[in-house]
Length: 269
Image 1 (cartoon, one colour):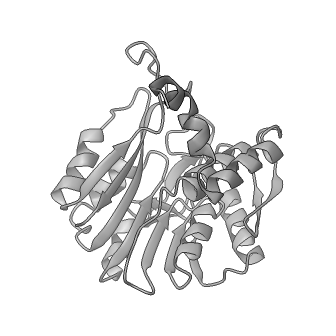
Image 2 (cartoon, helix red, strand yellow):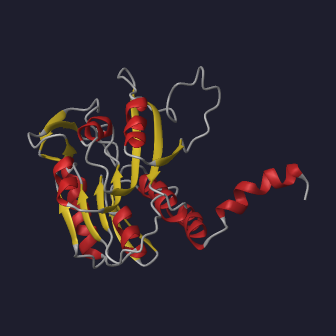
Image 3 (cartoon, helix red, strand yellow):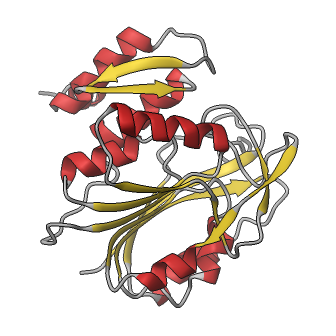
């Protein structure tokens, strides 16, 4: 096969190469034309979920189930997982599929999304997950938080803010002797939280951070990477996007509030 033909067929081949990726294509056909930001019940892989936005669900499925962003290996039959930013529960369903006996503590800041998370886990027969309906932060004094549709609520939101309860992640890290997987997807609060946890990550085996850079705010990626390095993680950074003309195209997928989003994967060898 010539190079140009391999290049043209690469994406279609990748999109159909596994059962989960083929399922994603099927979900695109089924739900891809639905209106944005309208609650809907979706079904996939034996699961039923209430979601606030079908498009967000589709890309969560692609990242979590098709591309397996959170796949990790452990010899622990009951791995300890802290899921910071659990959203409607897609990541929890994946973790439980991967390790049915996993001990999961899930944090979700947005009250309406947290309510959906509770409902989805109950609907899918998952009752052994501890859900904390509070924001992951650096103290327990609460945090001003802007609510957005789907999965974009943030301390940097331009919408009207409200004060919500918070927990200090560092306290939860100190409670565990070993953490198999720590997921941090907290829409811009990751730099402050990781800085506060800088010296309490030594017993974390796998660390996933979704890094967000908000326009008109310091980017601070170097600090986040330094925390990975100071704690002995090997890491991989993935932008998950192809940006044309990046010297003039400064927005993340046309986003009005962010100019960069990265996935950072850290592990111990």
